[in-house]
Length: 127
Image: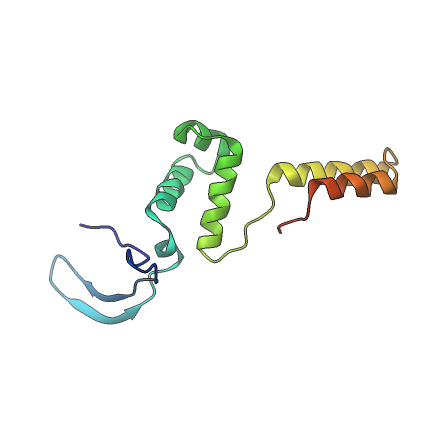
């Protein structure tokens, strides 16, 4: 049985499911069906999602399974989220650095000007 593809291989327009059929008894239902957000993913993205689920979302295990770096795992996860219609979040390491700066500011270890400079150096937040 072939896998459902989400986009037209010629023009990249989302594909539409029009018929569902039971392979056992032959009953068929016709119409226009929403295949859901997973159908929007490319084959490569689906393979990544399968690895992510297989590794129970543990990024370290996904890194080892696919032989890719932490930033690559996070980047691919963000691509999947965007393809599915969700907003991609900030890189967890960036969020941690941002929080550390804010904690240092709150505790008085950093002045406001220095904290602002460090936050600007991190760049704008994506989420």
